[in-house]
Amino acid sequence: MKSSFTIGQLFDIPVKIHFSLLIILPFFAWAFGSNIIYLTEYTDIARRELIFNPYILGAVMSVLIFISVLIHELSHALVARKNGLETTDITLMLLGGLANMEDMSEDPKKEIKIAASGPAASLILGGVLMLAAVGSPDFIIEDIRLVILYTGQLNIFLAVFNLLPAFPSDGGRILRAFIAQKKTLREATEIAARVGKGFSLFFGIIGFMTGNFLLVFIAIYLYIAAAQEDQFNNIKSALSDLTVGDLMTEDVKTVPVNLSVHRLIEKMFEDKHSGFPVTRDDKVVGVVTMEDAQKIPQEEYSNTPVQAIMEENIHSVKKEDALFKAFELLFQKDIGRLIVLNDNGKLEGIITRSDVMTGIRVRQLENIKKERE
Ligand SMILES: [Zn+2]
Image (cartoon, rainbow, N blue to C red; front, side, top):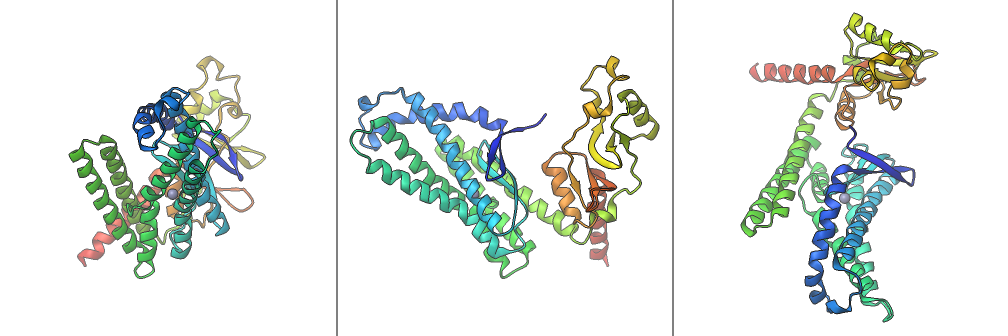
């Protein structure tokens, strides 16, 4: 099952929504709605001046806040594009968003620009909205004024929160990029991840002491993210001089698009393979696995071609790509194998999760050996 779905495109970048967002949105609506009483006092707007039910305003707020997050992520993506890095998609999820872009860590100056652009957009948006609310003419109903003011404040909060040096947040990336100008990237990531873990522990303790469980939740999320980034960093340096070509399997068995699913299953048993690239006129047009076959009832196996059940959206790498790139793709897309194509789109091999894991294990053994010598 896919964990996110595409809702549209902005500047040629697909915008996706993660299912976790659909769960949290009603909660946000409720939380914002409940907060309206406190807000009306705080913002000098009498509650009886409001026309709409606070929970309706809360629902509007929760949508506006995710549009704000989208603007924040889009700003990262557009500045990245200006610096020659493409963003494959923007995913809105439980705790904000994620612009899925190429690795930018090799160039600290670019990374600072890209990481800072998101919080900068949030700050500007927040400032403009707050000014608009304060300076709005009298005929504007109080409900709108309140929503604009609160959205403005939340944008400022979004900027500040993202600027905290809790790697891999924007602030953490900026911190790492500054350190990376003096030390190696690996050391910089290690330090930034340590600062990130420290911050999340601090948040966690504060959250527990004040009974603020949202903060505890954020702390756990940040800790996991920092630990994962640290682990990624170790794998990256372990795989640093290996390419896809070093570990891929070259002799790949393929199946033609018009092969019946019945024959496909037979072939899977014969060859002891659970997945095959699918070809039409020597070009790879999809991938088919055992799971795809389970999408249709068995009695249809004989008269259904592989084409009807294959996955057309194929993920590929090139032979000369860094092995770490293959690792990242397998991990991000949560898939088992990648097709290796040459510049003309011709099949050159296949690389699986276990191939990459072999690379990591071999390197770890080599390192242990080196340490012993
Ligand atoms: Zn950001």
